[in-house]
Image 1 (cartoon, helix red, strand yellow):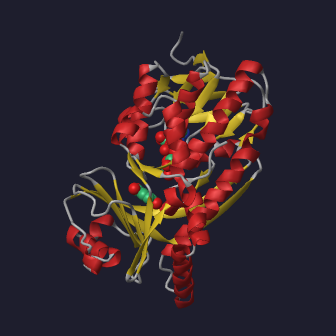
Image 2: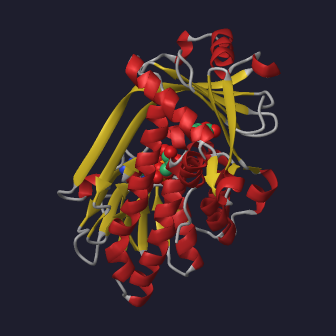
Image 3: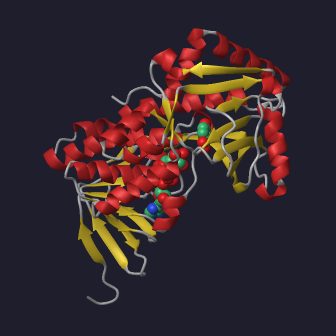
Length: 396
Ligand code: APR
Ligand code: PHB
């Protein structure tokens, strides 16, 4: 072969992106005997170390466990009955187990990804990491293919029965769907997130409304805490000293109220996240199917991003299995319409939690937020609605 020829390989599903969506899809397909190749621009180490939200819905835990990925999750994950919702002088526990009989798990997305990478490696999954120039071709035919440049600089081509666009919000897959609609909302605030080497000061997550802005106390383990502050978009993480961060967290989370204290500790990571809602429809075109952030983004307030990616894949894996194995396209044809129902439910819930809890600067909004918080924390109907959305509806 001369230096300019393209190395071509054939598989059943070409998966673009090795985030949770792409990795889980390759895993579920492999369990059904469907072969895939996973293509990723980043390095393996980068993919495995990214820090992201860490709440799993009951259905996500069930699916990961059924897929053989639940061993470390069961050992190291932390099952939570609910959350605390807080506004000045009041902290209320919403017990999802009492309200709807379902719970949530604290288990970092970094851990989910690491477990998936380990499982795929053990299964000899074919990966191409550190690729560039990813391009999709002929997705409206039954012989779609993806071209790219591999880590050594060689041109490559992967031919498949179907292509799964699991390439996140900046990948090329969404752009390969002609027409379609997008709905988008950018929120006028951002989250300043820290990781800290200190035991969490709370048994369950605290979502706090405060006149200075929203704060969240989350956690990663018995010795690592994850906390967030609402800040202006574009805030430079280096512009806040560690002391300033802990002081503001203490104020917003209610340090000293009813004997509760926030214990500060060494900050090991600081980052600022933008807040955006985005939905693209349809989530498919011909033999191209989008899953996860490639099709939708939610602000992190409802902790839905990872769960929604898992829910998409829970639909897409059987749909592609039927398509590849039985040439039965019924589930595949219905994929986008079925997936979008949950996408919009989670998009609404994430928007609702976000607008209920963040300072907008408008005094009228503030009174509405407080009224809404009082209702959600005092009415069983209000609390049940939040619980059902937060803990998530069953995937089926
Ligand atoms: N070619 C190959 N891979 C690509 C390309 C490309 N051109 N562009 C992007 N990618 C890769 C990214 O490097 C990333 O690893 O696609 C992957 C997409 O992964 P994620 O962004 O993690 O998206 P997804 O798998 O859908 O997971 C959704 O991530 O953002 C969070 O809150 C969100 O928890 C949710 C989860
Ligand atoms: C997190 O732990 O990172 C986290 C938890 C809950 C959220 C968002 C992020 O709503």
